[in-house]
Amino acid sequence: MALQDLTPQLRTRLSRMERAVGWFVLLATALLVFGFGYYIYKTAARKGWFLTKAPFYTFTDRATGLKEGDPVILMGMPVGQITKVAPMDPFSTYNIYVEFELKDPNYGYMWTEGSRAKVAAADFLGQRVVEVSKGTGGHAIYIFNPLDDVTRDRAGALAAAGGWQVAEDIYDASGTNLVVSALKQPLDAKQIPLIFTIGRTNVRLAHVKEERKKITGVWNDQEGRYVHFTKQTKPYWLISDETAAITERLERVVDQVEKALPNFLGLTNQLAAILHNGANVTSNLNVVTRNMGPASENLAHLSTQLRGPGALGEWLLPPGGPGQLTTALTNANTLLANTDTNLALLVGELSRSLDSLANITSNLNSQVQANTNIVTSLSDAIVHSDDLIQGLKRHWLLRSAFKTPKTAKTNAAPAAVQGTSRAPKDPFRR
Image 1: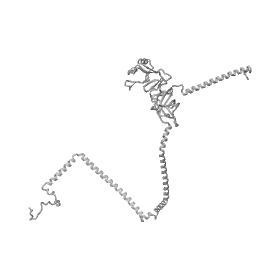
Image 2 (image 1 turned 30 degrees about the vertical axis):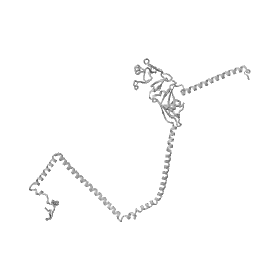
Image 3 (image 1 turned 90 degrees about the vertical axis):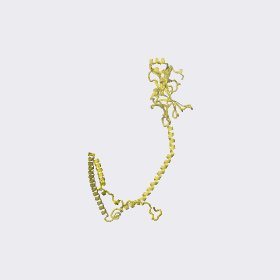
Image 4 (image 1 turned 120 degrees about the vertical axis):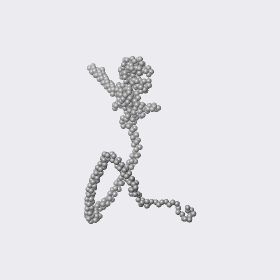
């Protein structure tokens, strides 16, 4: 039916319905656009698209288990992601270039001392993860304060105004002693002579009272100062500590197992041979045990023959032998008891004799200690007695009493013959 065939009332109602449908479609479209935009906003916020990101890079030996988009871990939490994994130049000393970025505010944990990038295993399927460590000292790697290179005159004016700090490490003329450390203390008039006494014409300063939303400077280890950060500025290098993937470590373990497997099989063969020999030994022991049965029965029968009247023990001893043996043992026991008693008495008498001797010697020692000249007197008495005896030996009346007995000369050797005996008519006789 054509629209012109409708009555005016129907056409009016249809126009109203068309307007309502149009408004409904417009509202649904607006809600759809708003929901899609809200979803994009939440996704961007969740992924940190609106957050400031600080770039870093490191080097690894291999790219195993690493790919772009993988999370970067700090203190067990994901704080960024890997943005680039690429091989280095063939003539470079490094193999794989890995670039990653940390989201705000996690890059504030990165300092020039203590911060490192560790490439560690993440699971047993070969996946690896980049884990950065918290800094312990030095300088903050990235700053958000504007940098400016100023002369000595302008440095003096800024020091008077306040809010500025030196953005580089200043050393003395020898180049070994640190005079001013970067971003450690406000710039003052005392620092200016130390900075410009070594022939410097300008110094790099940072306005610490002003902080911007984007990164303005990054620390340069070679120059020892903060440099301006732009899109063309190279990220900061974190030294890496790399560990092999679990699959590679398992592969090395499998290789070692394969090398040790022949020895293990040989050991199992030796154990099987030992068990076989043990089984043979036990079977032989079983045979020996069965053969020992008659011998044990004979031994039991022999032991029964040694007991009771008329047994072999009765045959070995003569009649009355057990009684005589008992009497002899009783006498021996009595003799041993008497000997023990007499020995005890003898030891007691000997002890008393030793006590008496000890008393005598003690009295003699007391006499000697009391009279110190007794030894000299005894020596003089012995000498005088010897002189008396020698004088009696020389006296004419008693000399004969001390002569040597003649029997002492009977065993003396005969005198030697002088010359040679010859006949009376011997012409050579003189």
